[in-house]
Length: 436
Image 1 (cartoon, rainbow, N blue to C red):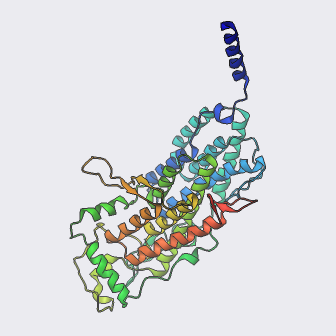
Image 2 (image 1 turned 60 degrees about the vertical axis):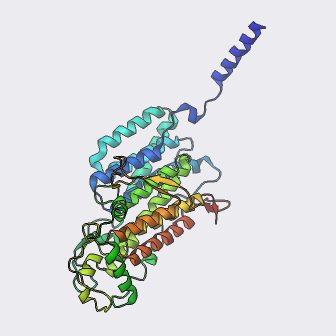
Image 3 (image 1 turned 90 degrees about the vertical axis):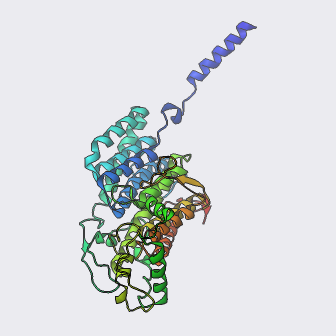
């Protein structure tokens, strides 16, 4: 009996040795979406990119990853989704999706940020070493490189360059400084048909009661002379100035955190939807800033005697809690528009706004109790967006009407992206798990 049991065990081991091995078993698991978005975030930090430029970069990287992965899936046959910038034509049906994803991201980042090429090359080599050099990997890598190159070429003349500066303005209600970056108002969108639809109706008239009410509020809650540690911490947490991943980068980080257990196709689609919504909303934001050219609260309060409103009072010594008045026209708040778009894409993808998470931003202040960057916990995506938007008001750099207009702009634009992009080509049409 003992010999029979040993024989059966030996036969089972042999059978196991010859059992077909799945692709997942053949190669150590990679996380292309997290790894290469992490590199994109770092590249933005090093380059000290503007918020609009950062959003464009995130959109291009994630468009390439998605189209590389989706192209192979489409060539497998069966149900598949629409492409974003690169048609599946020419994709290898048996190509390795992970190899395609890392190669596509590498191509885009190397072209966008050539100073980081050595690091990108190193990461690509490490990823491919884990995958091996079989024919599926070779085919996936070649396809991914093609996708990345074509995505970069598709956006090469999109209007994001050359830099255009709106000259300094003068007079009541007008932003008084020159503003470089105005060219983004005319950049070609990734996903929406007309970014002008979301520009908004503008700030209330300087002589209106609504305007006076907004001035009165920020004059109190955004005053640097009034010590309020909680308001200062809220502003600092979301401030995200040059040298950070910028406001759109925080929504990329949040998306990576809450989607960690999703498959590569699902995750690449989420980050592509998010990336293009964040970039497109930067266009609407730049348009609003250029058209309305509204002054910041610090200027408005210091020059309130010129606005023609009997309910506002000049305070020549008023300073924003943020420490500076802000470097772009006030209407709308870009932090708010990015947050409205980011939170709406995430809620739409997961079919639920109430997804709890804890997050640390690039600019989070140090918590004196722990000596570590401050963490903030949220019960929903919209709660985080509201916190981010309101941080600009308590920081004294945006009026509440510009916060609310920005949140609305972002949510509305994201709804168009979710309704029309990366949908199934056949069968029930939906985004995420939500029937439309």
